Length: 273
Length: 358
Image 1 (cartoon, each protein chain N blue to C red):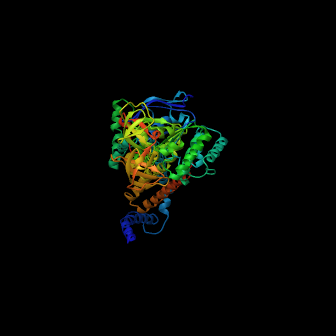
Image 2 (cartoon, each protein chain N blue to C red):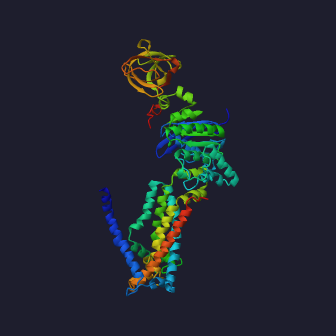
Image 3 (cartoon, each protein chain N blue to C red):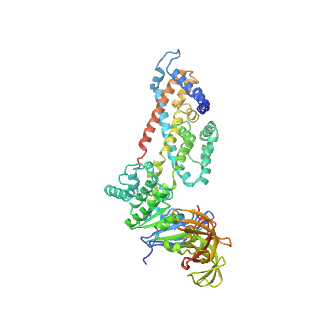
C-alpha cells in the first residue's frame, strides 16, 4: 500500500520527465540523424566541421570559458566575504546579489544594450567628463560582460552554500597551527569549497555555452555563437534536421566538459598539498 | 614562585551588550594543569579564546612569558588549541592533519615523519597515518586533534571541553590519558569544562567562574572542602546549603540547633551560609543527634545510599551514607565541627548558587 502511494507521488515527476525531457530529446535525436525525407544520415552532425560552424563553436567555447573564469574570480572572494560576515549582515548582501535575478533576463540584457550603445548612457557620461568613448558593443567583450553579469549569481550561491557549512573552528584550527591568511585560503578554504566551485562552474559554463540571446543582443548580427547558428536553423532557415544535428554535437561537448570536471573533482578530493 | 607563563590582566569583554568577562585577572604558572570550570555562559570559553587569540579583549592585556601578546594573531602565538568538536581537516589524511603545523613551519620531511610517528604513539594510535578522518570514532578523532596540536611543541596547550562529546567510559579513560600526556610532555595545560568531576580529577588548579567573574581559585581539595561561596559549593559536588547564624567564633546555629564548628572571624550573631557535604552528615539515634528528622526519601546509588532527611522546620537534608535508614524512620543528625563550612552571605547576585544541571 505504502509502496503504491510512493509510486503515485512520483507520477507527476515521471510524466514531466517523459513529456518535457525524454520525448523532446528523442525528437532531437531523430531530427538530428535524419534528412528532410526522413532517411538516416550523419550529415547534420558532421556539418559541424564546416568552417563557419567550427568558428561559431570555438568562439562559444572560448567566450564561455573566459566568462566562467571571470565569474569564478569575482565570485570566490565575494562568497568568502559573505561567509565571514556571518548570517545577519551576510544575508542582506546575498539579497542584493540575488535581486537582479528577480528581473527578467531579457530586460536585464536589453538594459546593457542601452547602456553600452554608441550613443548610450555610459558614453553619454564619458562625453560629459571628456573621456574617451567605450566601444565594446557588438564585440565579444560585450558578450562576455553580458554572460558574467547574468550568470555571476549562479557561481556565488553554490560556493557560498558550501562555505557556510565549513566550521569556524576548522579555520581557527588552521590559524592556530600557524597558517597565515593566504595559507588558510589555499590549504583549507579552497580545497573544502571544491564541490561548490564545481557546481558553480557547471551552472555558469553550460548556459554560457548554449546562449544565443546574450550574443544576439550584445554582439550584434556579426558575431555568431553556436547557439545563434542553431537558433537560426530552427527559426529562419527552417532546417530542423541541421539544427538538431548541431544541438547533438553541442550536447556531446557539454557531456565531455562535465566528465572532465567530474574527473578533476575526484582527483581533487583529499589532496591538500 | 616563578614568573607566571600566562598573565591575564584586567580582561573585559562584551558581546553586543552582554558583559562576558568583567575585569578578569588570572595567572598561570609554567607546567601547571589549570581548569576553567563553570556553567555555560560563565566566560570560560571566551577566556580560552582570548588566550588563543581568536577573540580580542575590549580592555586588558594578555602577557605570555613576559611579552604582551594581546594583539598578536593566533598563528603567531606559541600555543595550540584542541577544539571542542576536534576540528580536524576533513580533506586530509590523519598524517596530513598532524603534519599541517609542521609543514607550515617548513620543517624537513624526515623530521615531520618522525614527529607523526611519535605523536601517534603518544596518543596510542600507531599505524593510523593513512586513515581518513571520517573513518575514526569520536575518541580517536579527539586523540588526533591532540596529536596535531602537540607536534608543534607548544608551551601551552589550550583544551576547550575536549571530552564533551564522548561517552562516560571513554571520558574517564581520556582523563587519565590527558594526565599522562601532561606529565610526559611537561607543558602547561589550560582546560575548559563544565564537568566538575573532570576538573577535580585532572587539575592542579581549578578556577571556578560564573557570570564573567572568578568565584574561587585553588587546588581541587580547597575548592571542594572550603568553597568560598554558595555558588562554588553548589557547583562543585552536591551540598546542603543552609541559612545559619554565627553566634560567636566556633559556634553556629542551624535550624534552631547549635553546632560546634572551626570557623572564626565572622563576628557575633551574623547571618551566614553554611555548607555541609552530604557525605559528612552522620545519621545517629535521635537522642544522640544535634538535630532530629525523619527520612523522607531513599535511593540506592551503588557506592552509597542517598537519603533525604526532613527536619521539623521543613529543611530537607541530603545525606550520603553506606548505612541505610528506611523511609519514615526518625533519625538524629550529627556533623563533625571540621565538616561544617561557614561562608559569608553572597555580596552580589552573581555569587548566588545557580542550577548545576545543564
